[in-house]
Amino acid sequence: MILEKPTQKDLNENESVSTPEQIERDKVKDIIQAFAKAYLALKIYPIENPAVTNSTKVFSDKLMDFLSEYEEMIIGIHEFSLSFNEETLHTDGEKKKSLPFLLYKDGMRELSFHEGLDLEEIGDFLETVKENADLPEEESNIINSLWEKDFGHIRYFALDEFLDKNIGGSDSGRDLVPGKDELSTGEIKLTKEDKDDINKRMEILAVDPGNDLTEGLETPLSKENKVSEAAAISKSDFPEIEKLVADDREFSRIRELVTLLFEVLFLEERKEKFSETLNVLDLCLQETLEKANFSQASLILNQIFDLKDIVPEQAEDKLLLLDRIIKKAKDKAAIQELEKLFFSGKFENLDPFFEYIYLLCPDSIPTVIHIWEKTKDLNVKSSLSFLLQKIGEKHIETLVEYAQNGHASLASEIITILGKIDKKHSLPYLKIFAAHKDKSIRLETIQALKNIHDKDGDDILLAMLFDKEEQIRIAAVTSLNPLGNPAALSRLKEVITRKDFDKKSRPEKRVYLNYCAQNTNEEINFLFHSILNKRNFFLSNKAMTTRLCVVAALEAMATPEAVTILKERSHLGKKRIRRACKFALRKLAARHSQYREVEVK
Image (tube, rainbow, N blue to C red; front, top):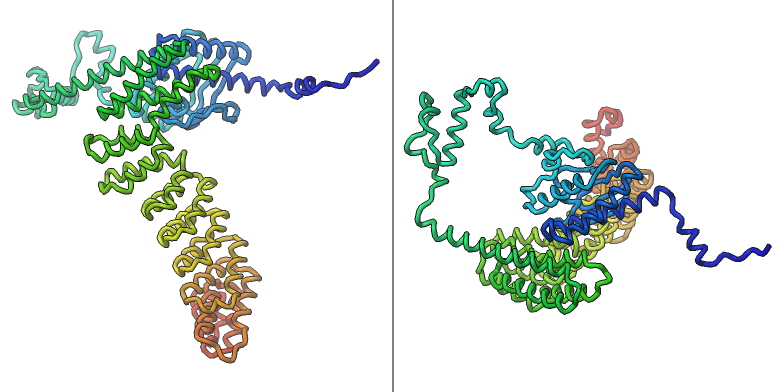
């Protein structure tokens, strides 16, 4: 029998054999991706749209097939990711369209689906998700919505503090609900508190409940307060109301058109027709920008991004056309026009403008920085600082590049941002700012490194010990991690033993020596002892200052070894050193009872 050598194909097939756990994990990942695509379609299109129908059917089929085999699927909910068995399987950091964030923000930490789940329940669940996705972030509450639905085969785990705060809503009005006994008699008795509460509510609505409720109460509705000032409308308000209504109608008209265009784009297979429809959508975008309607412009651009995400990779022509319209929006000339519009002061609400310009990053970063540097309004500056921080989460490298060549104030702002992001990503950039030509920037960098308290951060601080500015060197030493950094001690010992150490000022010497005193060991004891033992017939004032600083450091150490050195030097060497050692021993004896027996007179 002749054995054939296995082919490369055979080897690959053997290598690709998966364990049961890997198979389960891959199926869950597939379901989560289908869930995310269905959610994306729900955000873009009405629920009856074919794109929604198709994506939700794919999700439903895959989920029910999985449950029939494995009985349950438990998904971990994180701020911007979904996991299975502690492994992240889906990530979406775009807050406004992120499925994980929608679930996470109200306290959900786990979502599970169980055997018995049918199409109707999945449909209700997805409709609930859509309802919350369509609401503003501060108004939506997925936990409340799921709690009200009380699904039989969909469960979730939420943090108690969120449940206590949200589930069940406000207690206001709870006491106004009559009991069954009262209802059966056909009569409801109101207490004085009930009547007061009703009066307050009626007053807000500008309604007079009548004398039957207010009679005999201490605070009845008077002629003056029957109509709430907040509810009163004068003729002078009519033009503003008419404008608001007209604007809302215009916004609704464009929104309906845009929704229709996106539905056509999703279904259109012909390249020419897809291109023509996209051109109409581009005209809508340009019109909204000309009218400074940045909320609508952001909505259109976001939906273009979303559509690009769900278009299959095989549809290269569609993807190229979508890229073209995105590039047009991010064109340098288009962004410059936005900057001119900003400085023209033609619109008051800047938040929608900043939201739109954020969508154009990283291309819009130079404009954001230029606006930040030019504006004098503190409120606008604060909003821009928040925008820069948001940009820094994704494009910190670009911000650092501009900050290196920009104003010191910009560099300071970027350093603040670096102090708030993950230290693994911030340290390389802080290292760049540690060598900045501006002294104030180097000082701010030191403060940021101090807050990080990391070994790699200490390495940057140690490199700054050779800065030309004394203030920088002192700040660098005082910002080092005070405990247990052998590299820091080794570098400081190196500096202290150099010949030019005596030339440093008293404050700088004390900082170096006191840091060493905090980390006492045999090497530090030997170093301090050797400095005091140096024999110099003619001792310069600066060398004398060094020795006096060593005496102060030994006093700060307050260890038996330090006391031994002080006691020895209190009888030897220069008179000024002897007197300093005796004085240090007296202070130690006064503070520590165990050293009173060694006090030297």
